Length: 427
Image 1 (spheres, helix red, strand yellow):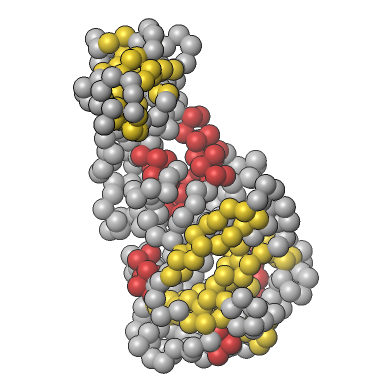
Image 2: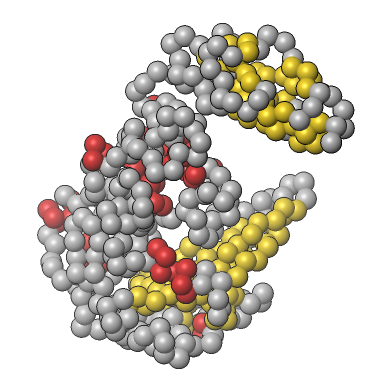
């Protein structure tokens, strides 16, 4: 645990109100405006109500590049059921408030657009429900969304304007991840809050120490207890191992579903689970994506690592499947670095095929390329190339419809996966 000052981030437990102004159950009357929820005393300026406590996480969930501001309101006289590992339990009436802001000018990163504020309510029946309020363009207030919504956001770049889709989740979407098996509340747990934070008072304190001092937990932790508690590793924390950082990223972004009794898959992404028991490295896959010899994580082989493949795409088989329209480039760089550091033989990348497949009016010449010293075998009938198939030694002439597949081989290296392009010629 990081060293802290003698002062506490929370001098005392703030006065709060159960449920704020939200109904105790999802079927109650929901406030139409964010200003009516009780979350803020000044909604346009996002000044939180007295009972809201700001918090932050060591490793945030990737939300398409948005920055998030977070608060929690714990009902008076109630305690959080603390656990050093695993999930915490929160009393009915606890409310989590999270605002999403997106940078909309790459030439001026400080310029952000306020998109939405989500509230997650621990309800009277022991479950949770979530709602989203979409901010008005002038930031005067935010309006309750009745269902999901996708909005195209314009973002200024150095050369013009690009667009990015933002997905506002429905109330049912919230329950896709906020399940009982995942503990209902995501992120707010020991290994995520064991970090310093600067509070509105100006005091920097470890969040667990501050919450403990304010009496939010059902147990009193000593300084010795606090020092022994686990903490995730930030992506850029060079004092922690590459494995720790990669596993922390997976914990934050995958563990809500990928855990025992969770989604239909064969691995456990929780950081609490030792790496040897996670079934990550060389772990079996449920869906092979037509890759030969795939694994959840294949040592030194990003092309056969199905977890990496599905996280590094926005295609239909992307993971997570909900509310993600962009790739976390920093996160993927971390996973790639970790995968390539794992022990094993070097791996050949799939051969490059140029030009790419498509419709062509006349015969074309196709070139294949791989690493120096590698040989390329290819087929033109759609079958998977083997070491005895056609040897690529000069450009390939295609005169009709062709499924061209190629694979690279090199002594001492794991063969590449198959490259494929489909050419429709003269059609």
